Length: 599
Image 1 (tube, one colour):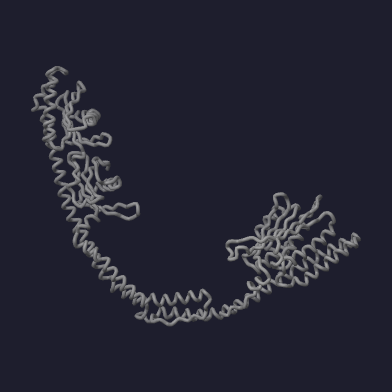
Image 2: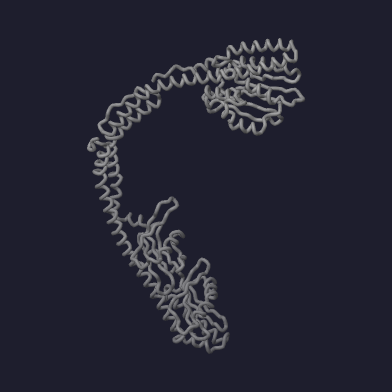
């Protein structure tokens, strides 16, 4: 095989020449653009974040100094320690402290509230800019913990995090003396400035999280994004992090994560920036994205033309040829293409169709001969089986000296043997088969007078349909032999014929249903299970040769379109159901005696 002319070589070379430059350009452009964008955006937003955090920390530090100086510089707070609780001077001093706190809240822009707590008298003075009841409750609930933390000699500069339902705050408490504690309250939302960060888009934003990863401030980020950011807090010492979020559709969405831990409390300032929004503002990258569909369309058209000439057209010719062969057109021959692989495939295809064309004729003819021989052999097995039973009946009647019955039986037997002369045919009509069964049952009635009867229940116009000869008789014989035992009341055999419908057949009314039922003892359970499992077919030389013969003749003739079912009736007695295609003699001839297909 010439490799240069091969389809593999042409495909590899063509695809490489078309796609390699594009891949190299896209790879270099994406890597370089992403790195530049990440560096620039992270630097800009980190500067904003650092400036915001620095302002917050500076205000918290100044508030610390303010609180520490209250016990030394504020005469009203100092005088409260010496004034009697509830006296007029005490109340006037508290009012002056309240006025001073309200003035100082305007000076310290982040501070939400100042408070003074009298531990001896459990009296809390609170100056706040709003929502007085909520903040009073938060301060009162946090004071025991704050006082316990201040039992040591050294007061730490850190601020504590307190929660009030959906509202979180920073609180700082200092001890003025043994009786009074002063403190400040800061709303967490006042520390978060999401409007300062660029490229946040619709899915980005800023948030303050605690050491446990829980959100402390309001944020445009959803809970999944906050949880994602909290999982990467340990990497805040890096300039930035690229983290991924798996969406509900299974795709990954990337974010640029920036963060700075606070020096004044156990919290972290976090910013998440969606990368897709960051890239949207790059003119060069935008231009590349706009040109990509045009370039992809050009490449696709070029590749399609290339592959059509090289691969698709020869493959389509080969596929059309295979479809024609599948429809039975075995005279198909394909032209030899240029590629060495397809040349070999086409040559093999042409050779294969030629061989199949001759082989199909030989196999079909051999199958017809084998099928016909097997059918005739099975059909001939049933005659000796019945002859032996008939002779036994005549012998029994002659032994009883019932000469009139012997004469009647001889007449019926003559008609029976006359039918046997026609039983060598491939098929007989249903009315002929039932007439033959009637002669047989009349013979049995003569043998057992007043103890045996039969009923033929056949729908009108069913006598024209054909079936293999001696299909019903073995089951009637078995019913008399096995079901007639130990009887005190008359034994009745009922033979019914119906035509039913099947949706799987092109003709919706094409199934002939035959049933042989009796009112006898029925099948023994063990024998019934064997019959239902088809074990009668395992030993064709045993006692069930009649059943074995019938089912095999039906399978040889009709295949899966025919079958047998065995059961016991609820009211007693055995039941055998036979189904096969409902065909007239003309229809049967067309279906099973078609001329040989010569291709």
